[in-house]
Length: 121
Length: 121
Length: 121
Length: 121
Image 1 (cartoon, rainbow over the protein chains, first blue to last red):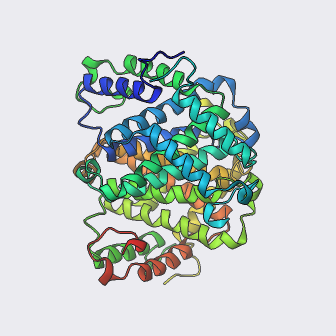
Image 2: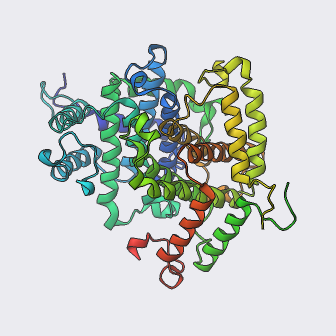
């Protein structure tokens, strides 16, 4: 349940991250170029959790690694939020615009059941 | 402003994505392993926007490419949300747990102004 | 066995790349940090070719996309060679050292048939 | 000039890798899709070495981390070679074809001193 005053999930986490960085004097490192590379690093760690799993195993991810997986997804999310803020992009609004674009690029009747790029449809 | 009934940003977008995939019969492609690879693809496109920019240029990103950048960040966000759902992970809660962990791993007095990994502190 | 006149594959391609960059005055962009990001971009494109394929489809890659795949692998190889040169690393020798290390880290009797990291063995 | 007996660098390393995998019964894991993900993991580790470095620091990489960097480049190279073999692609020949293509796509007079994509020239 959210109250009227509750900042949304994205903004709340961005505020936490901004405070976290400020306390540690880390804004000096958090330029967009560096943050993209940091994001790449976390995405690499995510891949390491899945690389040798079959598709079926990926759908039934080992319970003992579930929290490690949650941490990797969170690491990516946190850097992505930080990057969006440093790039002056409202990430939630950008997602809504992209969803609208995707609906236009991928009409149901053309791409039903097909994993193609829009320019291959 | 949010009302009591408003699902938060993460969950709202995940519902949109689930509906988008269902309409197109794309759940068959959206297993975690495939979604990690799709995320990698989007992260690669993000890198292409920054690869030849200096740090300073990355901080003053070209205005004419700002919407393209917003789209890339959104693409990553959307696949990340989709992946979290398929992995049964509450992404917002995972971020909060990871923030708490990071505060413990990176005590202010030890890492003030230093870009080190926690095991190098 | 190498003869005196044979430049090896790595060095020959690195010479081609150096000449290519010099002719276009591109050395100014080819610092290691930028080259890592450019490599990420190409790796992202490689992922896009595989993301929706099943394992079996990845083993029987569509013939009509085979040359596109060859180009992506080449793009990664070329940036990797360029990066190694700019980092003053002899890539072939580094591979030999890493192979020796891997043989020590992954003893046959401990890891036969198991896809584990050395610290999980 | 190559002599009959000299396997080139790429092929020699691919033979080493094939033997290494066979001894450990790891061919079962080395399908192209998995190998792409393993490559992503190594590329992520490479990013971690560079993410907080300035461009200048990336050009004067810390000597004490130079061997760690060599290992990361080697890890990427080794997975790339393995992937090329499993995809039935002659990586060296693919590089030569891509270099020829790049020369055509990026004519010196059009792109001298400019870091643009060929479709932006």
